[in-house]
Image 1: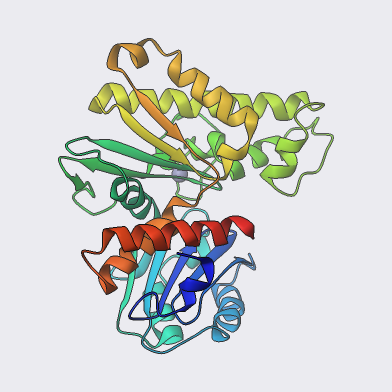
Image 2: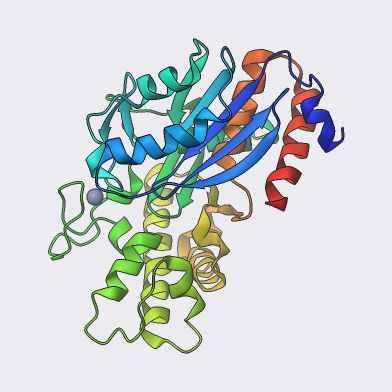
Length: 325
Ligand SMILES: [Zn+2]
């Protein structure tokens, strides 16, 4: 299949997949309208302003009756955001209704981004009978849990809030979730950036984690903060391994693109005394957006079920298109 084939009635219906993050929305179209772009989500402290901007952007591509899959990182109930600590001023808003109005579609689905990422990894690999974790290490830290041949969601449907596990109850740093000392305050991109900028000796003003990471060769403070964040994440992952005896772990997200973060994290996991005893296998890949691709698989399946080879072709070609942008 060639890239142009994505537009040639490759699916019986138009499909849009949106991966919503705190700072960006990745938007993929497959069908008559085939494209990919990354939209920088504003942070205006007003949900109406944020969404008016997104609404304008989406108006250009809207087609009625498309199938739409939304990958979302916060806690949801019936489309209402119950908690999204990376954008707390969105809490209480019905985000599903917002997208329904935009796309005027009855085939619109919203799911947790980490669970969609797990769907992607499982769809193309034979992990039958294996329990596994998926961890997204980016602006925040998300997690999907696969136990007993099913996604594990918990009694309230809120399982996998790994970034909000408390790692230092005496910490003075308060998380937007209300706790003190959450993991993502130390090990997420946003958390490490904030820790650096709060240092009295921070010599360099960094706008984002990438700038902080780019400075590590000459910036001891940045290097120490990223090294500590990676080691702490590895330690918490190994705590989960010890607790659940799960040996297959996928890690992706923008932090995996940091050579320092990814190397320290992998080394810390692999050198943990329980890693070799339990034969822990870690697959780390920062160059793909597993949540977006998981949404793509889910959408293709809902339009053309039982067509695995065809869906694999669509994902491979879409990945090529995404990689070029
Ligand atoms: Zn928290």
